[in-house]
Image (cartoon, rainbow, N blue to C red):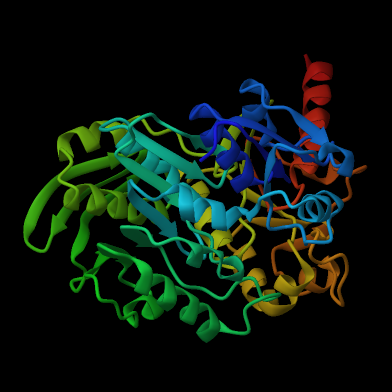
Length: 443
């Protein structure tokens, strides 16, 4: 690390990039960056830290910078190209992160789904016990002086997580995703196997995942779950409208009764993984119980608000497994209300590869609406549409347009779950505005 340079982030509003920028800022380094001018949910933290954020422009690049390039941008990006032409130090995000975690007890949280929620919970819990730095994929990052732990989200996309060699890894699942890069489930497995080979102390993996059960490693693999063959087990699970409560055992050793104020079976499993890490780092488990109780969740993961008589939930879910988990959580918290899903499909290749799974997952809602497919920077078009997905959905499938969200006004005292990894929030805002106007008129 260099106190004389400014660390300049190309694509600073990216969820991992903004987190990393905040960590360096907390550590006292000079930080700046560039991105699109459109507002994103990650930028509030940057604003509060007074980190300068400029519109993309190659004129931003000058001597004295160390450039950290977001993985969404190729070397042809004007700022990255100019930095390389000038001979400035240029790191890819994952390369820089891999160097940054050295010297700490590092815990990488990997998996096709559940990374951000688990990283957020683990960061929250450990921070209450010992100095902890963390990087969460919701744009949250903290660099703590003299940290004992460094908790970070380990992203499997394009095998980026292989740039780091953590002490511990939590692996929530292995699932086929990112079909624009991975060929099939075996290709995904091979990436996780390589990652497992790089972990230096121990791995905590979900026991019901058949691919995680196939992993081989020179370090111990501890499985967590609800089955008899799991090392860490959640037993006597009680799920209510206040959260979930369960007993935890390591083999036959009782580790206590835990309550988590979160919803869905996946959050029981995420909590179990956190407890397992704490156990092996000999952290006081009674203190862990208290920290779990005060966890409020992470950004864009089951984020709730009330408008008029409606409950609106915002969630990043963009894969069938995530949709199922989010709808399961909504059912747990609101068992007596109708659950309406509004889903923005994310990338054409994902919709093509997982079309039938999307339809099955969405049918867990009482009614389903779709928006047009969000085209990412990696993929601007494709040979599929939301109408194709709608034909496979039994519970509706009407396509919502931004200038006409009125179909949602037919519901009262219900739950609307907006899901997607693109800009689905603009649909939420349009709906909320309609609801607010309607409520004002009625009053």
